[in-house]
Amino acid sequence: MEKAKLSSALFAGTRFDRKRFAADFARFRQVPSARGQDAASAAPSSAPSPEKKRKRKSKARAKKNKKKRAEEAASDCDVEGFSVFKGLATKKEGEDCEKKVETGMSEDSEVVRRRKEVEREIERAAILRKRFDIHISGQNVPAPLENFEELVSRYGCDSYLVGNLSKLGFQEPTPIQRQAIPILLLGRECFACAPTGSGKTLAFLFPILMKIKPGSKEGVKAVILCPTRELAAQTTRECKKLAKGRKFYIKLMTKDLSKSGNFKDMHCDILVSTPLRLDHAVQKRDLDLSRVEYLVLDESDKLFELGFVEVIDSIVKACSNPSIIRSLFSATLPDSIEALARTIMHDAVRVIVGRKNSASSLIKQKLIFAGTEKGKLLALRQSFAEVSLDPSLADFS
Ligand SMILES: Nc1ncnc2c1ncn2[C@@H]1O[C@H](COP(=O)(O)OP(=O)(O)OP(=O)(O)O)[C@@H](O)[C@H]1O
Image (cartoon, rainbow, N blue to C red; front, side):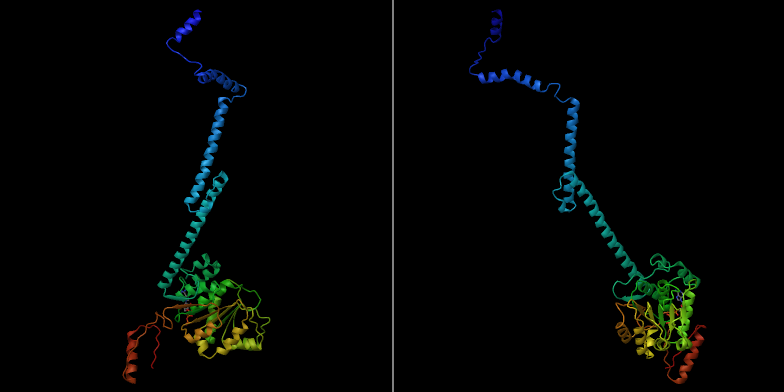
């Protein structure tokens, strides 16, 4: 009773209509029991320990982070312009994309790097050609040599050959050597036109000595045609000097050899000859030229001028190796000869040092008008008196 009074005293002044708020009352009454149920379900046996909860949370966070990274990688692809990778969201795809982006970038920069290198090479070649007054025509002409050492570094030349050059006192290549040697080394045919005394002989001998095997005993590998016996003998001497240290068989076609040589047993790598002697040996002595790899027409303007066209034609036919490399070296290159030569050459490069058909810039020229025959002699005497003891040539026409 006392208790009931106390309780009613607590609620004094309030009227709580239990009926009216039955639903709310029920809810409030359920709270403790509901809590009790939760507590029951989270009983120590089945409820995760704080440690487990922490682990679970960190796992979920890691998963979330990975997903985020993959999404970022995919969106990076878009940024780099690789839209094909759009939509990659999984970790693997994201990683693949990262790899592709890296490779794509390196491939791209590799292409740019190579293009710049080629551009630099072209520019360097143009500067060298301008400096040495070298004029070329033809596709993909290799760069001129900067020095003889490049023959070793760029073309893998045997050092004995470059050593022989320095023994002969040749320090720097002449302009025609700078351009014609790389052309022939790359297996291209060429017309080379450079003034008298400009070192054309070395320009065609060097690639031959570099490319053919010494002492192969398989027949003639290189033929050099010269318009005169003297020039043929001189070229043979030059060739032997340059080949010193290697067992090349270098032969000059003499009259006797041409008329009575036993060419079947002859060991010859390089053969130097005048056209008639060579043609005689081919026609009458069965000289086999089918393995010739290099055919050089030296002083080609003279060869054609001297009326050797048919003989040369016959020699060209005898040199039947399909991969033969032909070249023409000359001080002048008349259009008619070039047109004739082009009919037998493949994709030939034309190299002109100085102005086409001009005299060497090293030769000083002077034109003096003399009124009478007597005056010519007088002018000549005067000229000789003025100059030093350098070799001189006078034309009285
Ligand atoms: N790089 C070089 N440095 C110095 N001297 C050289 C070089 N190359 C060749 N010579 C020398 O220059 C001279 C002329 O060379 P070469 O006879 O080859 O000229 P060429 O152009 O063939 O003349 P030609 O039209 O009269 O036949 C020779 O004595 C040769 O030894």
